[in-house]
Length: 107
Image 1 (spheres, rainbow, N blue to C red):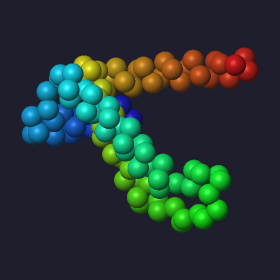
Image 2 (cartoon, one colour):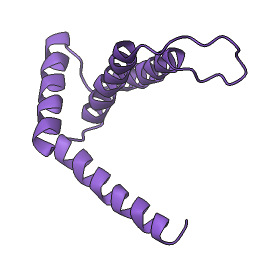
Image 3 (cartoon, one colour):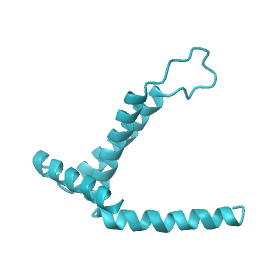
Image 4 (cartoon, one colour):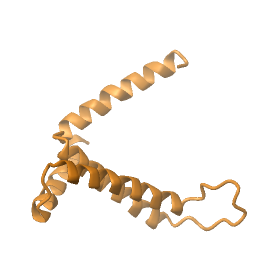
């Protein structure tokens, strides 16, 4: 799995070089904003409003597209903040262990 995550980071770094995206406050802020926007677009694709009577059919392909957009900007933000795929993977593993321990004690 870490190899696939490494590939995703490598692809994103290549795109960032191509686009001339460098680590600075403005790019970090823009990237964070893009994550929020993409999450909003994702929310529009799912039936998240329990008070709304009209339900639209969920478009799995569009939902996946929006989640991949979130991943794209998340990875970019990680890179802009100086984290690599290994650090993210190990931090995820450590947090997952904490989450399981919390469940063991009914946290």
